[in-house]
Image (cartoon, rainbow, N blue to C red; front, side, top):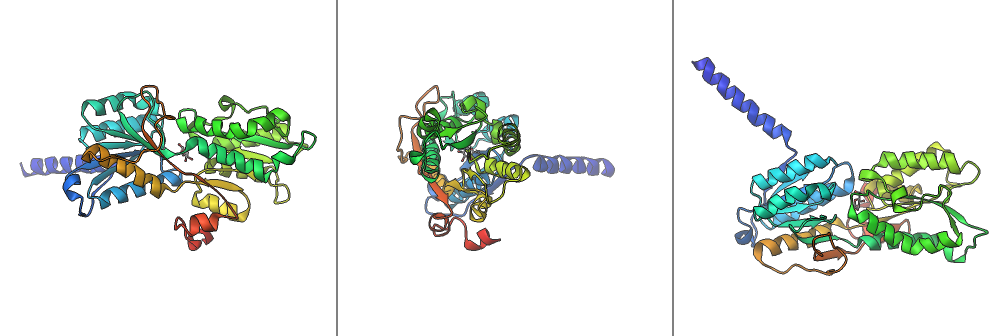
Amino acid sequence: MKKKILAVLLASAMVFSLAACGSKTDSSTGGSTSSDAASNGKTIGVAMPTQSSERWINDGANMKKQLEELGYSVDLQYAEDDVQQQVSQIENLIASEVSCLVVAAVDSSALVNALAQAKTADIPVIAYDRLLMDTDAVSYYATFDNKGVGTKIGQYIEEKADLKNLTKDDPKTIEFFMGSPDDNNALFLYNGLMEVLQPYLDSGVLVCKSGRTSFDDTCILRWSQETAQQNCENYLSGFYADEDLDICATAFDGFAYGCKAALEGAGYTSENWPMVTGQDAELMAVKNIIAGTQTMSIYKDTRILAEKCVTMVQAVLEGTEPEINDTEQYDNGKLVVPSYLCDPVAVDKDNYQKEIVDGGYYTEEELAS
Ligand code: BGC
C-alpha cells in the first residue's frame, strides 16, 4: 500500500515538473504600487514572437517590468517564430483567464481563431508592434511608424550616397533585403523605402543588377538571417563578379549580419565595403556600426513602445483613455485599429552616442565589450 501511495505521489510530481518544463512561461507577481487597487489580481498575458533576436527580448522585459510596477502579474511567452506554438500559447493564456492579452504575432493570420476565442471570453487584446490582421478582437495597436522606418532608411541612402547629385552615367548598385510577407510592418517599410528610392531606380541613378526590386521578390520569410545571407551570396556571385555592390538596403539588423557574412566571404574589405542598412539598433548592430561593417540602423526605443502599450492595457481594464496618434493607417481588414506610432530614429556612427548612449539605451561599456 505504502508503495502504491509513493508511486502515485511520484507520478504526480513528475506530471507537475513536466508541465513546468514544457511551458516557456515567465509568470510572476509584481510589487505593490498605488494602482494596485485597479490591477489587483489581474494577470496580463504577453505573447512575443521570438528570443532569437535581441529586440524582442528587450520588448518582453520592458513590458513585464512596467506592468509589474503597476501591480499586474505577467505571463510572458515566446513562440520562437513557430506559428503553431504561438497559437497554443495564446489558447493557454485564454484558458488560464488572463485579464488582457498583448500580442506581437509571428503570423497574425494564423491567430484569427484564437483571438476570436479571446473575444468570446471577454479578454481584450492589444496588438504589439505588429498589427493583428483580419480580426475584430483587437482594441488598440502600439507600434512604431512603420512606413516612417522605410522612409528614414531611404532618406539615409539618398543623402549618404549623394543620389541627388549622381547621374545614370555614374550610378550606384543596390540590392534589397525586405521583411517577412506575413508581417504587415514589412510592406509598410518597403512602401516608405520605395517612395524615396523608386525615382532613382527609374532614372538609372540606382541600378539593381539582380532585377529584384519588388516586395514579392525581396521579402524574406520570418525575417531569416540565414536566407538574407544566402540571397546576398547569390547576388554577389551571380551579378557582382566584375563590379562592386554599393548598397545593401536591408530592413533588419539580422539581415545586415547576414550580408556582412556574405560580403566577408566574397572578399569585400574596408576599401570597397558597401553601405549596409538595418533596423532595431541591436547591441551587435551598434557595435558593427562602430566597427564600420554596418552603416546605419533604425533605433526603436522599446521602453517607450512598452510605455504606450501599458497605457492601452490600463485603458481596456480600468476605463482610462490611452494616447492615440493614428486612426487612419492601420486597417486590418476588419477595422481601422486606433494606434499609437512611436518615432523611429536613424542612427549611425555620428549620432549613436547622442541618441543611444546618452539616452541610456546602451552603456559605453556594453558597446565596448
Ligand atoms: C519589427 C522590426 C523587427 C522585425 C524582425 C518587425 O515586425 O517591427 O522592428 O526588426 O519585426 O524581428
